Length: 177
Ligand SMILES: Cc1cc2nc3c(=O)[nH]c(=O)nc-3n(C[C@H](O)[C@H](O)[C@H](O)COP(=O)(O)O)c2cc1C
Image 1 (cartoon, rainbow, N blue to C red):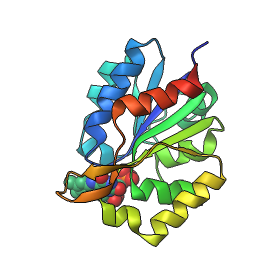
Image 2: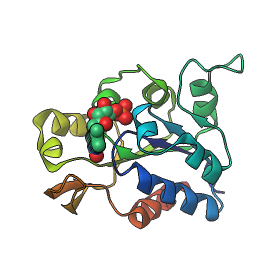
Image 3: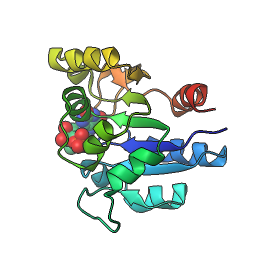
Image 4: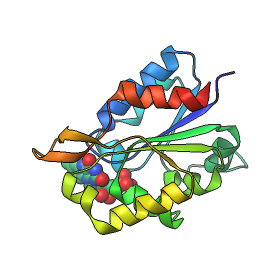
């Protein structure tokens, strides 16, 4: 039985690759609902994910059209939460239980399996606060996919690139089927 997947998208340049991930999951028979940070919508529009997932996309916490807020509805539905790309900011919020927007509130509401694919500039990835936050998440049983080494969009080489979409997909399948 395929698990219900919530795909979280946060505000990094790799957000465009997440559209391909969404498409791949849907083509392979997964039901996918997408939740985006506001900053992610600066990179890719919710309409892209709405079309690919064939479901409404959640961005705002206070857009409530049900008696139960969307983060609670989604958390009850979700069986696997994957965040790709995961920004340094989102990682920091998730590691510290900060819930100041829809996606970070969702992260502490949902108790499903959680996977994250970090993506950032190598200097950001090496930053001690970011590394500390990652250790915290690993201790909280969050599964990390990457980041990979290579060329990042800002022109630098190093560790911080989001893992290839196929690799993220294969990792999801390990936990979602
Ligand atoms: C062009 C551009 C690209 C960015 N790429 C990244 C990135 O790849 N990873 C990252 O952690 N932050 C990146 N940032 C910074 C984040 O967008 C910023 O920290 C933001 O607050 C993240 O918000 P969110 O986590 O709520 O999506 C980028 C910012 C800009 C302007």
